[in-house]
Amino acid sequence: MDAGIQAEIKDATLSDDEVVRRVLDGDVALFEIIMRRYNQRLFRVVRSVVRADSEAEDIIQEAYVRAYEHLSQFEGRAKFSTWLTKIAIYEAYARVRRFDYRNVDNVSKLEDEGVDVKSKERDPEQQAFNDEIKRLLERAFDAIPDDYRSVFMLREIEGLSTAETAECLEISEENVKTRLHRARVLLQRELYSAAGATAATAFQFLGARCDRVVARVMERIREKNRS
Image 1 (spheres, rainbow, N blue to C red):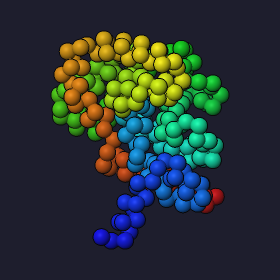
Image 2 (cartoon, helix red, strand yellow):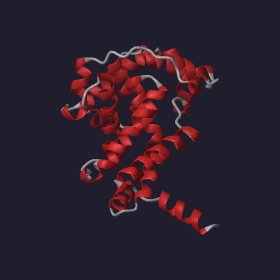
Image 3 (cartoon, rainbow, N blue to C red):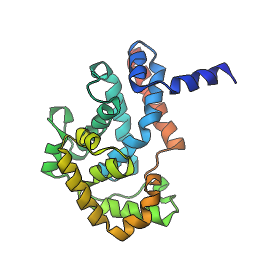
Image 4 (spheres, helix red, strand yellow):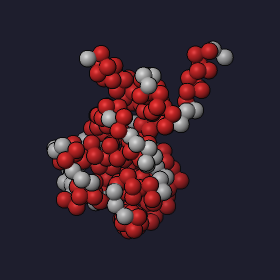
């Protein structure tokens, strides 16, 4: 096996904390591991807020740049993945409400205000989905109230625990359970039962889209390091 490929495989097995430490020590290229590891999760949770694929892609790029800029502030008290997910959620709400999320104490306050987001045209890539079950599930998901979408996305599609979801959204575990239950009811038992086996394949962020975000973020990071 080529030595370069062996090195890439070895690097890919590093824990999040090890990657962060090495990036802070100057091995900036390793930040790509973080992006490829969490691209799909961030895309899914951001899209649960903005409901538009192209806008979600822009937002996760901003979230990664923010995370890189403030990487030294990660203290390890929570999982790195939770810290990163919260940054993405804040970025998403900031885009929707058009304000500086750094002046907001927590996400639950944003949700209490209510987020009024109008449906937008789907990205052409979204229309490429030809599986009827996935499309039905996505449409049903978009139709449920704002307060429930992020909880459903993190718990049911991303598979986070109740505690992890509560930490990401800064709400109580009981609130997570209540919102998840209501989301399931609204999505209708028949529809979720039919699509549940393939729910993990919805809202995919793979291939060219993943590569595009990685390339753009790494270029922005390189520009920041040159300036």
